[in-house]
Length: 404
Image (tube, rainbow, N blue to C red; front, side, top):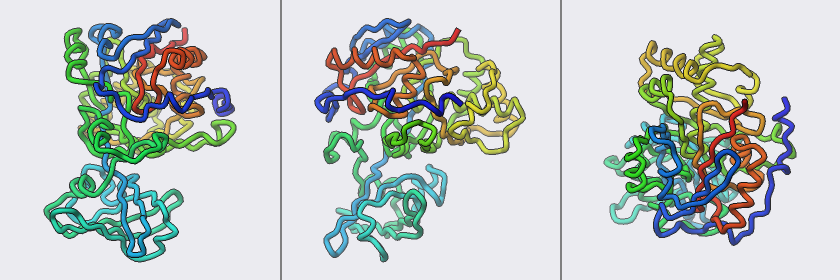
C-alpha cells in the first residue's frame, strides 16, 4: 500500500512563530480568505465567501461544542493536578454523560499524574457551596479512568464543567486560556457538547455570512463530530504507516443522509472534521453494499484503502440511508479513524473550507490529498501574503482536484 510509505518530511514547511495567530481578530469574518480553484490562487476576505461558492451548493458544517475540558485541582500539598476530559466511559453517550446529575466516568489525560498516586481530588465551586470530586479508577494505555461526583444534585455534569473547567485552547498558542476564548474558540452554531478542540474552519462564520449565503440559496446542514485531543498529535514516525490515527465519534441525522443520497449540487465541507465524516459515511455505505458490514458503525484507519472499491457516492449514501430506515435509526452514532493522505481520492466533497495547518501533520496530509502537490504553492502564497496560521488564523477555500 503506497500511501503507508509516505514520508512525513515531504509535508514539512517552515512556519515562523510570528505567523501563528495567538488571538482571534476583532471580527470573525474579517479574516483573509485564500481561494484555490483549477490550479489558480487568489485572495479575498472571508465575509465575501459567497462570491466564491456556486449557488445552491450544499454547505456541511460541524456543530460540535467545545467543553471546558481542563479541570485543575489543587492538592493540600500545593501541587496542581490537571485532569483533561477526553471521552465518556459511563455513560458512554456524550449527551447522557453531560446531562447526568450523578457520578460519571471519563477517560482523561492527567497532568502531574505522579503527584496523584491515590485518594480523591476536590475542587470547591465558587458561589454555591458545591464541590467536585475526582477519583482515579484505572490506568489506561492512553490515559486514566476517572470518576467524577458532586454534591449538588440540581446541577448536570455539563453545568459542573462549565463552572469548574477552563477552555482547552491549542498547546501551540503557548498561553493560558483567557475570557475571550470562552466564546471565540467556539463556532456561533455550536450545540452538542463533546469537543476538546474547536472545528476551527467554522470560527469565521457570522450571521451576516450566513445571510449572504442564503441569498444565493446555499443552506447550512449540520453533522456532529466531537474533536479529540488527538487532532494535535504530531506525526513522529518517518512514514505514516507507523502513525496511529485518533478515533473520533460522529453523529449524522437520517434526513441529511437521505438528502445527500439524491443530491446533484456541489458539496462544500466546512473543515477537515466534516470531510472526514462524509468520507466515513461513504465507506459505511460501501461496506453495506458489499455485505461487509459487521454491525459496528466504525471506519478504521486503513479500511478505505483495503476496501479499494468504486461505488457511486449517491449509491453509497442510499445504501446507508436504507439501512438506517429499515432499522429505525434516526441519528447515526458512529466513529472514524480514517486517515486521508495523498493517494486517497476524495469522493464526497467538491470544496473544502479550512484554516492553515501545522507542518508534518495529518491535517496537512488531508489538504495535500485534496489539492495534490499544489499544497506547497498554496502555503507559500499564504506565507508571502501575510496570512495568519493555525486555529485562530485565516481561512482558505480549496476546490478539490478530481482524478479524470
